[in-house]
Length: 253
Image (cartoon, rainbow, N blue to C red):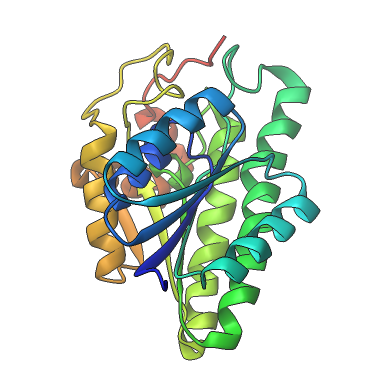
């Protein structure tokens, strides 16, 4: 039986991706979810199935481009890929990539190479059909390098600019592409941040905003608006001025 919509979500074992899986979980939808934590991923899958969705899960590291491409081909063979959301990523700190040079390389490898490894094969599968939608989760941190999180900010800036360029390239081919730039959202990644996080929102609220933005084919889904304006402003001001206005963001331990 043909499914209504096939949605693939990476990094779906927690955070925004888990909330998005639950937001899209409804009768007739096929969800293909991947992540690195089997227990949490299985729990999210069970919740989605109870809401009526058909779900498949895969334990997967997005830095392995061969396995990622093979998994996406397998999913597309079962049910033509309609929506692809790339959100697998890491930050620094003891619960993330750690610190120092090793952490820098791990963050860039996961957050940049991992996105490229998933987005390119998804686009290859959608292009012959001239339809589909791809989105990646960047961050409001992508608009300006922060001393406490330079690696994370750089990785999110790279994928944001890349995907914004891809949007114009693939629009004539019938493929919709969006970038998602959230502020602080309740998740395992933000749970141990050693600094104040203004306008924090739940994953459920973030998922509603993202789904609405994707349904409207919004190019840049950035929220909350006040944080978006401040992040944009820091990015466009001359460094001599923005350096003095930078919030104190401590490095994760």
